[in-house]
Length: 166
Image (cartoon, rainbow, N blue to C red; front, side, top):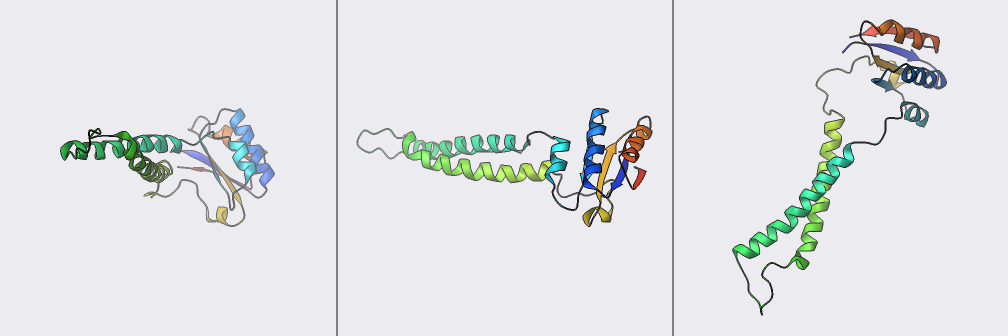
């Protein structure tokens, strides 16, 4: 993927560059920061995470599996006691709840790994080791037709270095 990377020394200039890039309809922006900063999160405004869908689907699968297994077992090996129903849902609620929590939490972890693309088999585009120590980096996906516009926005907002990356 082709884009432009800009290195910033100050946090405020990084935030202003991100805001201006978003105003100019640059959608794919990656930020590199030495430490988590809420200003950068607010500037990007990424929206809610999609991991919650993995949790919901995993929880519902665990719940249905938690009811299905004991009902299947009690139908396969019936234990008739005093006219009570063979497959009763009340005692199986505990098993359903426990499997809902187990499968839901495991699918949450799997969803986090999948959406974060961990493990990364290729190097991250535009990453510079100084982004882990003191500087901030902003990488913008821009084709050849918009790379000059992105470079201009980054320079105007105080980027120390701007270069095209592939």
